[in-house]
Length: 203
Picture 1: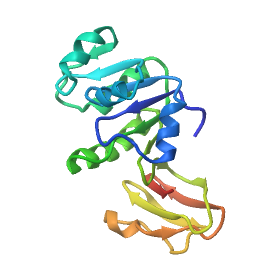
Picture 2: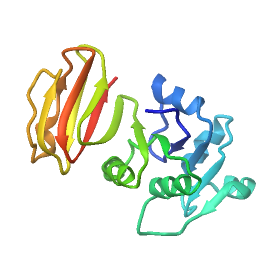
Picture 3: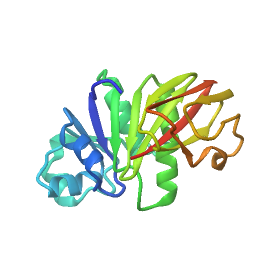
Picture 4: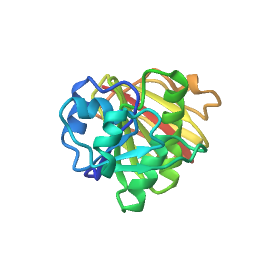
């Protein structure tokens, strides 16, 4: 990923692992998704913007930080996507997302699957959890890794899938479970494909 333009703090579990915390700490610009601002502020930080419909932001923070709030009542999408759209409008396209998993599992699945939509919007985006990073991809991509690092691949529209540098051969998966629990055999691996897929690298 190129240098990060901004970090989105979603309203899932607040990050606790070193890497997502470091990503958040070094962020040049932080957008909190609605209630995600509550804990961020409680830890002594001040976001650059708070995005959402305001339903999970505390009354105290809603009043105190009113100038930072960009109210978006759209119920056809979620706050993470509203934050992405907000940043895209500013020309910020290299985005890291933290705090997008945990709590409600349906929100977790939704937040992860939406990464593909953001890639289609022209965004360079990653979602860092406490255990690994999700990377939306298209066509042939080479990744740096550690030998023995665990990898999972979730197919969306890709065809002709092949790999170099992974322990187990890949193919045109038709179910998400089929591409899970692979392993790097070198310090890089390549996925050859035409179309879209999602890669998960375990820390």
